[in-house]
Image (cartoon, rainbow, N blue to C red; front, side, top):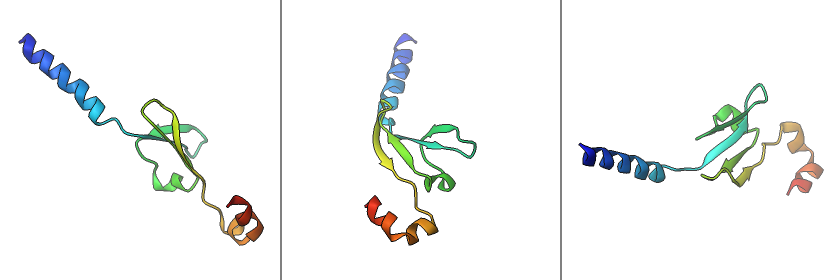
Amino acid sequence: MCKRLAIVVMLALLSSYAFSDNLCRYKNDVGGTVVDWHVPAKFAGRGYQVLNSQGQVIEVVPRQLSEGELQNKDLVERLK
């Protein structure tokens, strides 16, 4: 019985390492910060950050520009 329990615990620990993946941090409708495995489509356009397993930011995805901002060629050039 003790060996079986040790095997189960060992498998659980190994599986947590195998499934460790990046998390995403974004703002929801009410301005709260959410950390989840994915960003819902309705929030992705607002921009988000990708975090590694230690919580460090490894990528920043900028927000999408609005139609008005896209028509402002000066703004688009400055952002490049």
